[in-house]
Length: 263
Ligand SMILES: NC(=O)c1ccc[n+]([C@@H]2O[C@H](COP(=O)([O-])OP(=O)(O)OC[C@H]3O[C@@H](n4cnc5c(N)ncnc54)[C@H](OP(=O)(O)O)[C@@H]3O)[C@@H](O)[C@H]2O)c1
Picture 1: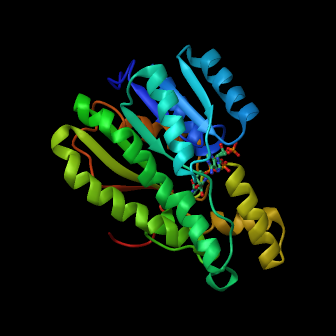
Picture 2: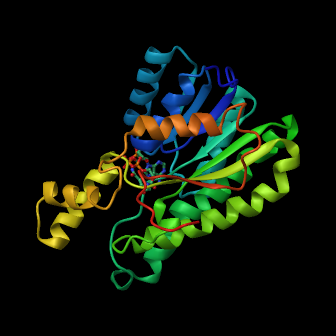
Picture 3: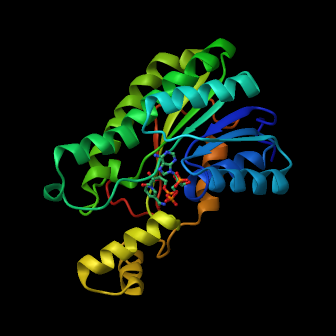
């Protein structure tokens, strides 16, 4: 199925590995041109090289720490100098450290807000003007199942990501008439480096092994398995596609049924 986004330009942040990388690859498979970033020059260049080789698309790779507003501005300048515009934005970042509410000081909460909330706001402010100009755009913000069902050992993540949902929902109201959608992706457990290190942390806290922690998590998921990054990438590509123009302001779970609420 042709998703009707060939030759569009997508900005995918935090994309050297994990969910960002999966989103970048799924878009590249549709013939989308990519601007990707992460904090590590060697890692992001290597990812770009592998994507170019596998999908034969143009990929710009840059170093950018999305916690930094000036870093995002500099990244935007490079993207616009190279591609002239941005059609699709996948706003993604690393995750804050695990821990319960009382384990963190105010400075930790500020850092998490910079990493997961302000990065999304700053990325949108950087790239939205180009979407408005061309009256076509897709904004996707990466969060977590924790926006629906907080995870006890991820206090910083629970707090910082809820604001992303409010921001994207508010934004969607203002831009829908310009053919620009804005949605939130809320993954449960998708197997990446981050999930592996969270499982290690759980094992330590619970005094069990990594394998037992993995089994315990699987038992909370009706699908009885951890998700595959490719499934996450496919969802991103669909929401960025020409077929998803009437889906906006939504928070879409991809969690194997892990969220237990009705709404
Ligand atoms: N995987 C899941 O199941 C899951 C579930 C819920 C939420 N999430 C959230 O989704 C996001 C991505 O998770 P993941 O599983 O893909 O993590 P991951 O496997 O650890 O990958 C993180 C990626 O982000 C980059 N990165 C980290 N901090 C960055 C920063 N400040 N600026 C720019 N790039 C940065 C890393 O590259 P560099 O080190 O080179 O910067 C890497 O490419 C995280 O916020 C995570 O908490 C993931």
